[in-house]
Length: 62
Image (cartoon, rainbow, N blue to C red; front, top):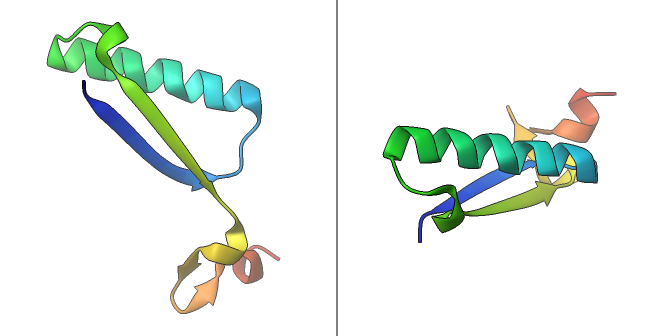
């Protein structure tokens, strides 16, 4: 059972569903494995818990 893991910021339920469908369809097509075999795991992270260049994303996006 292939697993697709995505780390991202918070998204709406609709965006999560859209991303799950798109990632599943793309991987299924590329790998020639039935879509039903895939598990998609989305981990939503707070901008306070992500940093780049030594700064929190929440500070960068102010």
